Amino acid sequence: MDKAVDVQIGGSHYRDMKLQPIDFIMQNNLDFCTGNAIKYLCRHKAKNGKEDLLKAIHYIQMLMEQEYQDAEAGK
Image 1: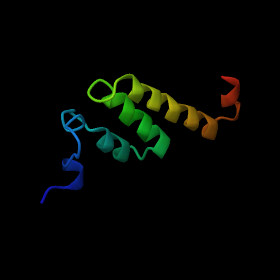
Image 2 (image 1 turned 180 degrees about the vertical axis):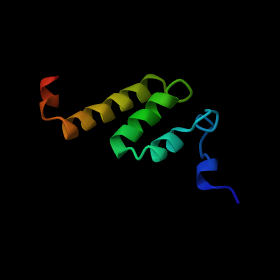
Image 3 (image 1 turned 60 degrees about the vertical axis):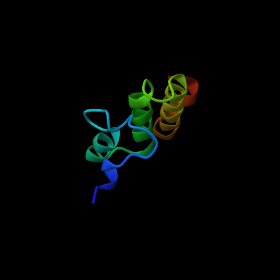
Image 4 (image 1 turned 90 degrees about the horizontal axis):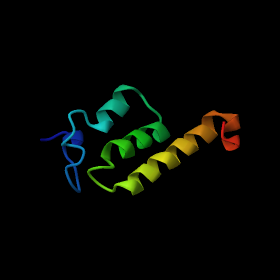
């Protein structure tokens, strides 16, 4: 039986990568926002283009608000 990480539902944009984002994210114990930003950055050319880049930016903005008090000031 295949491992869940070896199965992709809805395309092959992750399986086609030499290192899948989920492997990198889990091996480095990254938090939710960081992991999602990486995921969307990695797949934008193979899946949703600019929309995925905007999603990555959104997760980065949320991470900045969580981690840095001065994020809303654009610093």
